[in-house]
Length: 71
Image (tube, rainbow, N blue to C red; front, side, top):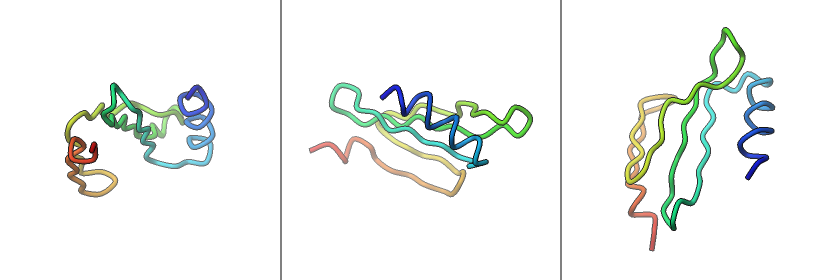
């Protein structure tokens, strides 16, 4: 998990990937952490932590019931 929180964001930012999402298991439920690349600092800025429902407009409109993903 440390790789997902430190190495991957650095590598993706260096490659100028605009959006980075990290999905984690929190107590058996999916949680989505969303980030957007800040052009001035070339690093990611958190744009949200989504539990229960993931609803975003960027990088494209998306609305997912995260609770429905858990059996």
